[in-house]
Amino acid sequence: MKRLATSLTLVLCLFVGAAAFGQAAVQVSRISVWDQVKSAGGIGWAIILLSVAMLALVVEHLITIRLSVLMPPALVAHLQEILEKRRYQEAVQACQETPSAFSSVILAALTKLRRGQAAMEEGGRQAVEEEGVRLFQKVGYVALIGNISPMLGLLGTVVGMIRAFHVIATQPNPNPADLAGGISQALVTTYMGLVVAIPAIFFHAFFRNRVERSLGEMNLTAEDLIRGVGREVPQE
Image (cartoon, rainbow, N blue to C red; front, side):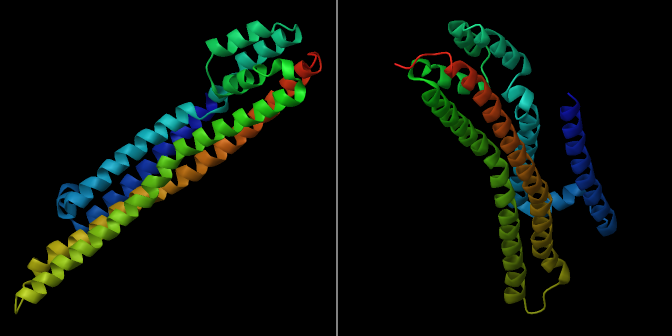
């Protein structure tokens, strides 16, 4: 719970900081947030949707990508107890009743119970790798948002500059106010894209490190359990 509270506090601080930065920019320019969003056009709304998706993913990952969720301590203690007593069917049932990444690893090992310790360890390692692929794919969506949002900002920059140069090309003496719309779109979309991309890149690295640490811990714990079981089971 302490880690979850710390992570949630970190998220809130980052987004409050981004909001404060945005508000400061607004105060300097004396343009309301709504006016900036309108000047960004459809590309700006797309970036806003990406920011909402990123926030939802970050909150979900903070809740689900934790060692206590991926490898419940109560399940580990229960498995250690029943496996020491060679109650293998009960261990299978416990894993099925408490679905988690660690449960999948132990189940994969127990399915090769009669093939000996080496086969069980191999089955456990393969299951850990499969869980790793699943978790890395899961956090990959945050990286995808971090890559797409600045590209959308760049697209908005190009579109805004095209609008501005079109005014110059079609009007002999263009009014600066006529140029402002395109230039504003160019700058605002770039700003919005970066505001979304920077925390997305940070959180992708944060969750990747958390996944790697969790996988390492699961692998070591599973090997300890499997090693104790494998010595007691005769090979076929």
